[in-house]
Image (tube, rainbow, N blue to C red; front, side):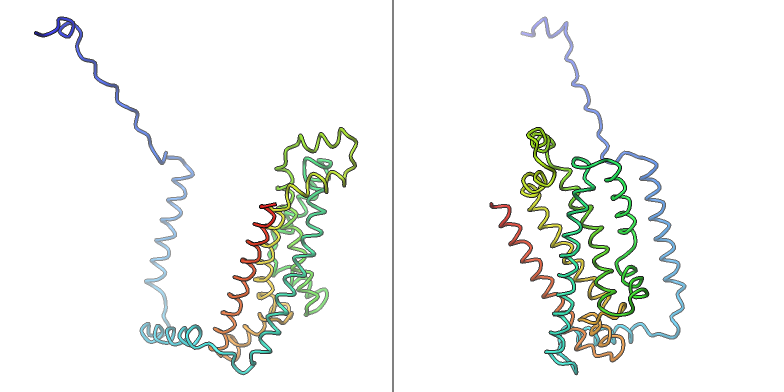
Length: 283
C-alpha cells in the first residue's frame, strides 16, 4: 500500500554542490603563463637556429663524458699534492668561519637596534634600509669593491664577506626577535629592567635556536662565497686552486678531487649545525 503522503509530497532532489575551482583565473596567473610560453618559444627558436661553429654534437658529448669520468671517477690530488690542497681548504674554512663570527656579532647588535618591538621606529627603519641596500649587492661585488680599496688579498675577501654577512644576519635575527611575544618584553619593562637586561634575559634565550640555525646557514653561504672570491679577490684558498686546476692547467683529475673535498666540508658543516640546533632545542 502506497502512503498518501508520498503521493502528495514529491521527492526533493538534493542540491548540487558548487564546483570548486582549484586554480582561479587571474591577471597575474595569465601573465605568468604568457611569459613562460614566450620563453619556451624563444628558447626553442634559439636552439634550432644556433650556430654550432662546426662543433659535432656526438664528439662533444663523448669529450664531456671523458671529462666527467676524469673528474668524478678518477680524482687525485694532481701536481699540487694533498697537503697543499688541505692547506688551501683550511684557509677557505677559516675565512668563512671568521667572517661568519664577525657577521653574527655585529648582525646581532644591529638586529637588536632594528627590531620594531625594542627600539625607536625611525632608528630601526634606517638600519633596515641600509642593510637592504647592502644585501642587494652580491658578495662577490663587495669583495671586488674592497679589492680596489685595499688591494687584492685576504683583507678584501674578509671585508666583502663580513659586510654582506652583517646585512644578511641583521635581517634574519631581527625577524626572530620581532616574533617574540611582546607581553614578555613589556612585563620586564614594567619592572624597570634595563635595555640590555631585557635583551640577554628575555630575547637571547628565546631566539638562541634560530640564532644558531641562521648563523650556520650563513656559514655555509660564506664557505661557498670564500671559494668564489678565492680567485676573484686574490684571497687564495681552495677556490684559487680550483680555478687553476680547471681553467689554467686543465687537470680535471685534481678538479674532481677538489670538488669532493668541498662537498665533504659542506656535509660536515651541515652535520654540526643539526647537532648544535638539536642540543639547544632539547634544553
